[in-house]
Amino acid sequence: MTLKADWEIVGSPIDPDSNERLFLTAHEWATIEAATARIIPTDHDPGAREARAVVFIDRYLSGIDYVFAAADGSGFLKLTGKFAEAWRARMWDMQQTYRQGIRDLDEVARQSHDADFKDLAEEQQDAVLETFSGAPKPSKVTLGTTEPVTTFLQGTFDEGMSFFPALCLHTKQGFYCDPVYGGNKDHIGWKVIGFVGPKSLKDTMDGTYDTTPYFMEGDYSWQDLVPHLHDHPFQPAGG
Image 1 (cartoon, rainbow, N blue to C red):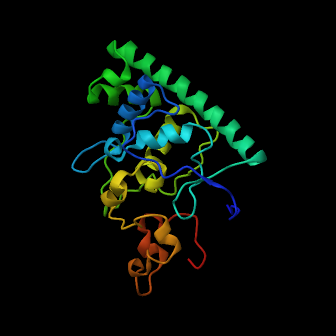
Image 2 (cartoon, rainbow, N blue to C red):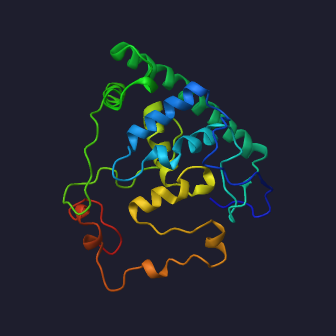
């Protein structure tokens, strides 16, 4: 999407350490933080809690002030006119989805464990999420295996999503987003996967950040680079 370069820039990068709530109530914040911590849990690496995914989600749900970061990372583009109206309508829908989803999640938790989701032990929270989502807890993915990676080419658009799929998507976005959006504190998400990203968005505009050293030299076929798609019916151009 091309955005006008002369749009007004407002605000500033989001502080990941902030506990100020712009949309979520105190109960909702604690519930979402607990849920994100089970979607990307803390193990030998930090997870969504440490990356402050809940801050990303709260700011995202708060309205239209934190939708598009300015190219230099100094703030956010001010949405106006019909563009702003469309985003307000979209965010109102997602706000209602979250509010009802949190109530439903607590209801499942109380039915099975007589307590709100945020007050349960981690194992109990996992069980509630399995019941709530209707799917078993995903198994670990180990790089270098021949097992298909089912998360390949995930979408990034949440319009029309129900609560749990939206929460999973937003948790991942909050874990891997540019820190200007409030998540990925101290580049935690990038460090976990070994991505040496820019220190700031500004570095991507003035040439400070250069990805050239990370390109592989030599001739490679797409089958070599994405082996689990070797027999997939989709054939990339030149395949």
